Amino acid sequence: MIFKEKLYRIKQCLSISVYQRKYQRQSASNAFTYIELLITLAIIAVLFVPIMQLFSNSLYSVSASQDLITATNLAKWEMERTKNLNVTNAQLEEIGDGIYPASEEEPLEMNNAKWRIVRDIMENSDPLEVRVSVYREGESPQSVVTLVTLIEDMTWEEIRPVK
Image (cartoon, rainbow, N blue to C red):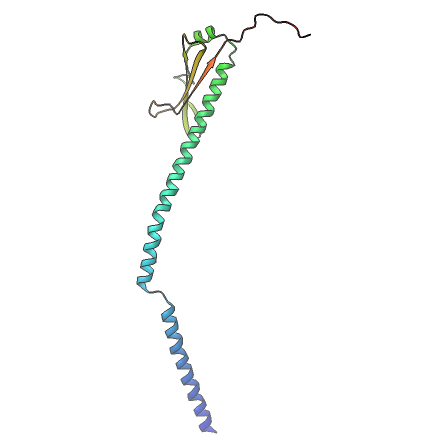
């Protein structure tokens, strides 16, 4: 009986050590080597650079389109303001060119930028040509947006009631 117990314990020890060796071989073959990790990191780095450039370009595009939208809205606002002065072409020519806000005043601040609006009236044009340009303060003198419209006197020679 003792012999059987000893034999049984020896078999158990042998089977455990065989199992441990087998498990160690499997775990060692399933692990990543240093070279594999380096190759993986290199591939990730190569793919990461274009993605970051794409992200950078998209941020620039969003900023540029935001500036364009702001400048367009300011130009439309000034054009509507000019058309709604309710004056004749001769009076509008007299009013002449203008800068809004005036040079001595602080520029308009919108979307983290400072803006100036310039209105140019082309004299001796028929119909009267009005140009509105929007500039960013402190940058090159090139306008961000320029709108052009033609204004014609709307005069009534005779008003008759509708029958």
